[in-house]
Image (tube, rainbow, N blue to C red; front, side, top):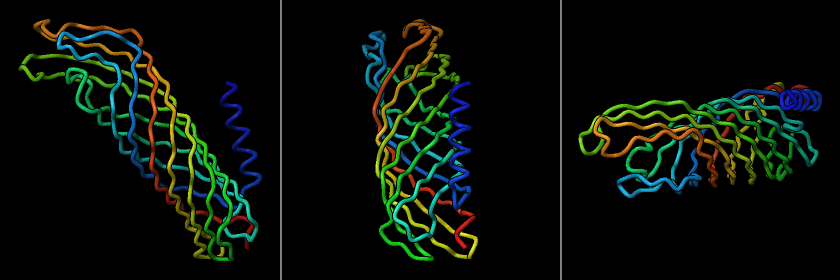
Length: 235
Protein backbone atom coordinates (compact mmCIF):
# COMPACT_ATOMS: atom_id res chain seq x y z
CA UNK A 1 0.00 0.00 0.00
CA UNK A 2 2.80 2.41 0.91
CA UNK A 3 4.66 1.49 -2.28
CA UNK A 4 1.55 2.14 -4.40
CA UNK A 5 1.03 5.50 -2.66
CA UNK A 6 4.65 6.46 -3.31
CA UNK A 7 4.33 5.56 -7.03
CA UNK A 8 1.12 7.63 -7.28
CA UNK A 9 2.84 10.59 -5.63
CA UNK A 10 5.82 10.36 -7.99
CA UNK A 11 3.45 10.13 -10.97
CA UNK A 12 1.46 13.19 -9.81
CA UNK A 13 4.54 15.33 -9.17
CA UNK A 14 6.04 14.26 -12.50
CA UNK A 15 2.81 15.13 -14.32
CA UNK A 16 2.76 18.62 -12.82
CA UNK A 17 6.41 19.23 -13.76
CA UNK A 18 6.29 17.62 -17.22
CA UNK A 19 6.56 19.63 -20.42
CA UNK A 20 6.27 16.46 -22.50
CA UNK A 21 4.54 13.08 -22.22
CA UNK A 22 4.58 10.05 -24.45
CA UNK A 23 4.58 6.28 -24.91
CA UNK A 24 6.88 3.99 -26.81
CA UNK A 25 8.93 0.83 -27.14
CA UNK A 26 12.04 -0.29 -25.30
CA UNK A 27 14.45 -2.95 -26.54
CA UNK A 28 17.47 -4.36 -24.78
CA UNK A 29 19.89 -7.12 -23.91
CA UNK A 30 21.54 -8.03 -20.65
CA UNK A 31 24.22 -10.40 -19.43
CA UNK A 32 25.05 -11.46 -15.91
CA UNK A 33 25.00 -14.21 -13.31
CA UNK A 34 22.99 -15.29 -10.28
CA UNK A 35 24.23 -17.06 -7.15
CA UNK A 36 21.71 -19.50 -5.67
CA UNK A 37 21.90 -19.90 -1.91
CA UNK A 38 21.88 -23.69 -1.81
CA UNK A 39 24.64 -26.28 -1.46
CA UNK A 40 22.47 -29.12 -2.79
CA UNK A 41 24.32 -31.20 -5.36
CA UNK A 42 22.72 -33.37 -8.00
CA UNK A 43 23.80 -36.94 -8.50
CA UNK A 44 25.52 -35.79 -11.69
CA UNK A 45 27.91 -33.84 -9.49
CA UNK A 46 26.66 -30.42 -10.62
CA UNK A 47 25.83 -28.00 -7.83
CA UNK A 48 23.44 -25.15 -8.54
CA UNK A 49 25.71 -22.37 -7.26
CA UNK A 50 26.50 -19.63 -9.78
CA UNK A 51 24.72 -19.65 -13.15
CA UNK A 52 25.48 -17.23 -16.00
CA UNK A 53 22.88 -15.99 -18.48
CA UNK A 54 22.00 -13.52 -21.20
CA UNK A 55 18.58 -12.11 -21.98
CA UNK A 56 16.59 -10.19 -24.57
CA UNK A 57 14.22 -7.50 -23.27
CA UNK A 58 11.08 -5.99 -24.81
CA UNK A 59 8.97 -3.42 -22.97
CA UNK A 60 6.32 -0.79 -23.60
CA UNK A 61 6.67 2.38 -21.57
CA UNK A 62 5.07 5.64 -20.53
CA UNK A 63 7.42 8.61 -20.20
CA UNK A 64 7.31 12.19 -18.86
CA UNK A 65 10.05 14.79 -19.30
CA UNK A 66 10.50 18.32 -17.94
CA UNK A 67 12.45 19.60 -20.96
CA UNK A 68 12.19 18.41 -24.56
CA UNK A 69 13.48 21.47 -26.43
CA UNK A 70 13.82 24.40 -24.02
CA UNK A 71 17.25 26.11 -23.84
CA UNK A 72 17.71 25.40 -20.13
CA UNK A 73 20.45 23.00 -19.05
CA UNK A 74 18.62 20.39 -16.95
CA UNK A 75 15.87 17.85 -17.64
CA UNK A 76 14.29 15.19 -15.45
CA UNK A 77 12.73 12.15 -17.13
CA UNK A 78 10.61 9.44 -15.47
CA UNK A 79 9.48 6.20 -17.13
CA UNK A 80 7.11 3.37 -16.21
CA UNK A 81 7.34 0.20 -18.31
CA UNK A 82 5.83 -3.26 -18.67
CA UNK A 83 7.19 -6.09 -20.80
CA UNK A 84 8.99 -9.40 -21.00
CA UNK A 85 12.47 -10.83 -20.54
CA UNK A 86 13.55 -13.98 -22.41
CA UNK A 87 16.48 -15.42 -20.46
CA UNK A 88 18.92 -18.06 -21.67
CA UNK A 89 21.03 -19.82 -19.03
CA UNK A 90 24.43 -21.29 -19.78
CA UNK A 91 25.00 -25.02 -19.61
CA UNK A 92 25.03 -26.41 -16.10
CA UNK A 93 22.61 -27.35 -13.37
CA UNK A 94 22.54 -30.89 -14.86
CA UNK A 95 20.77 -29.46 -17.92
CA UNK A 96 17.63 -28.80 -15.89
CA UNK A 97 17.75 -25.02 -15.63
CA UNK A 98 16.37 -24.15 -19.02
CA UNK A 99 15.34 -20.90 -20.67
CA UNK A 100 12.97 -18.76 -18.64
CA UNK A 101 10.51 -16.01 -19.59
CA UNK A 102 9.73 -13.25 -17.10
CA UNK A 103 7.04 -10.59 -17.01
CA UNK A 104 8.51 -7.33 -15.80
CA UNK A 105 7.46 -3.98 -14.35
CA UNK A 106 10.03 -1.20 -14.09
CA UNK A 107 10.52 2.47 -13.35
CA UNK A 108 13.51 4.57 -14.35
CA UNK A 109 14.56 8.10 -13.45
CA UNK A 110 17.03 10.04 -15.63
CA UNK A 111 18.76 13.31 -14.78
CA UNK A 112 19.90 14.93 -18.01
CA UNK A 113 22.20 17.81 -18.84
CA UNK A 114 21.92 19.38 -22.29
CA UNK A 115 24.94 19.14 -24.57
CA UNK A 116 23.19 20.63 -27.63
CA UNK A 117 20.12 22.81 -26.99
CA UNK A 118 17.99 24.57 -29.59
CA UNK A 119 14.32 24.88 -30.58
CA UNK A 120 14.24 21.67 -32.66
CA UNK A 121 16.93 19.43 -31.19
CA UNK A 122 18.26 18.57 -27.77
CA UNK A 123 21.13 16.19 -27.05
CA UNK A 124 21.54 15.34 -23.39
CA UNK A 125 23.42 12.98 -21.10
CA UNK A 126 23.19 12.07 -17.45
CA UNK A 127 22.81 9.35 -14.84
CA UNK A 128 19.80 7.07 -14.52
CA UNK A 129 18.53 4.97 -11.63
CA UNK A 130 16.06 2.12 -12.06
CA UNK A 131 14.04 -0.44 -10.16
CA UNK A 132 12.63 -3.55 -11.87
CA UNK A 133 10.36 -6.32 -10.61
CA UNK A 134 10.18 -9.54 -12.66
CA UNK A 135 8.33 -12.82 -12.13
CA UNK A 136 8.06 -16.19 -13.87
CA UNK A 137 5.96 -19.34 -13.43
CA UNK A 138 6.81 -22.20 -15.79
CA UNK A 139 6.60 -26.00 -16.07
CA UNK A 140 8.43 -28.44 -18.36
CA UNK A 141 8.25 -32.11 -19.25
CA UNK A 142 10.12 -34.30 -21.69
CA UNK A 143 13.21 -36.49 -21.97
CA UNK A 144 16.60 -35.64 -20.52
CA UNK A 145 19.93 -36.32 -22.20
CA UNK A 146 19.75 -40.00 -21.16
CA UNK A 147 16.26 -40.52 -22.60
CA UNK A 148 14.56 -40.53 -19.18
CA UNK A 149 11.16 -38.86 -18.89
CA UNK A 150 11.06 -36.01 -16.39
CA UNK A 151 8.84 -33.22 -15.12
CA UNK A 152 9.93 -29.96 -13.55
CA UNK A 153 8.31 -26.76 -12.35
CA UNK A 154 9.84 -23.45 -11.39
CA UNK A 155 8.53 -20.08 -10.29
CA UNK A 156 10.78 -17.13 -9.60
CA UNK A 157 10.71 -13.46 -8.78
CA UNK A 158 13.45 -10.89 -8.42
CA UNK A 159 14.17 -7.19 -7.96
CA UNK A 160 16.83 -5.29 -9.90
CA UNK A 161 18.32 -2.07 -8.54
CA UNK A 162 20.26 -0.30 -11.28
CA UNK A 163 22.43 2.73 -11.99
CA UNK A 164 24.22 3.91 -15.14
CA UNK A 165 24.67 6.54 -17.86
CA UNK A 166 22.03 7.52 -20.43
CA UNK A 167 22.44 9.42 -23.69
CA UNK A 168 19.27 10.95 -25.10
CA UNK A 169 18.28 12.87 -28.25
CA UNK A 170 15.02 14.80 -28.74
CA UNK A 171 13.87 15.74 -32.25
CA UNK A 172 10.99 18.21 -32.50
CA UNK A 173 9.24 17.26 -35.74
CA UNK A 174 6.10 19.40 -35.29
CA UNK A 175 5.24 22.23 -32.89
CA UNK A 176 3.41 19.78 -30.63
CA UNK A 177 5.29 16.54 -31.43
CA UNK A 178 8.79 15.30 -30.62
CA UNK A 179 10.53 11.98 -31.22
CA UNK A 180 13.00 11.06 -28.50
CA UNK A 181 15.51 8.22 -28.34
CA UNK A 182 17.72 6.92 -25.55
CA UNK A 183 20.73 4.67 -25.21
CA UNK A 184 21.61 3.49 -21.72
CA UNK A 185 23.90 1.10 -19.90
CA UNK A 186 22.56 0.03 -16.51
CA UNK A 187 24.54 -1.91 -13.92
CA UNK A 188 22.11 -3.97 -11.81
CA UNK A 189 22.18 -5.64 -8.41
CA UNK A 190 19.67 -8.51 -8.20
CA UNK A 191 17.90 -10.18 -5.27
CA UNK A 192 15.15 -12.78 -5.56
CA UNK A 193 13.67 -16.17 -4.79
CA UNK A 194 13.04 -19.37 -6.73
CA UNK A 195 10.81 -22.35 -5.98
CA UNK A 196 11.92 -25.44 -7.93
CA UNK A 197 10.52 -28.97 -8.24
CA UNK A 198 11.93 -31.88 -10.31
CA UNK A 199 11.01 -35.53 -10.75
CA UNK A 200 12.00 -38.26 -13.21
CA UNK A 201 10.52 -41.70 -13.70
CA UNK A 202 13.66 -43.63 -12.80
CA UNK A 203 14.84 -41.66 -9.80
CA UNK A 204 18.37 -41.90 -11.21
CA UNK A 205 18.74 -38.13 -11.19
CA UNK A 206 16.93 -37.69 -7.90
CA UNK A 207 13.67 -35.97 -7.07
CA UNK A 208 13.91 -32.51 -5.56
CA UNK A 209 11.39 -30.19 -3.98
CA UNK A 210 12.78 -26.88 -2.72
CA UNK A 211 10.31 -24.62 -0.96
CA UNK A 212 12.29 -21.41 -1.42
CA UNK A 213 15.81 -20.85 -2.71
CA UNK A 214 17.01 -17.25 -2.50
CA UNK A 215 19.54 -15.79 -4.92
CA UNK A 216 21.48 -12.65 -5.71
CA UNK A 217 23.47 -11.53 -8.70
CA UNK A 218 24.89 -8.85 -10.94
CA UNK A 219 24.11 -7.89 -14.53
CA UNK A 220 24.77 -5.27 -17.20
CA UNK A 221 21.81 -4.10 -19.29
CA UNK A 222 21.97 -2.28 -22.65
CA UNK A 223 18.75 -0.50 -23.66
CA UNK A 224 17.41 1.40 -26.67
CA UNK A 225 14.19 3.38 -26.14
CA UNK A 226 12.10 5.24 -28.71
CA UNK A 227 9.16 7.47 -27.70
CA UNK A 228 6.86 9.76 -29.70
CA UNK A 229 6.04 12.58 -27.27
CA UNK A 230 3.48 15.34 -27.00
CA UNK A 231 4.99 18.75 -26.16
CA UNK A 232 2.71 20.41 -23.61
CA UNK A 233 4.17 23.79 -22.68
CA UNK A 234 6.97 24.44 -25.15
CA UNK A 235 5.18 26.16 -28.05
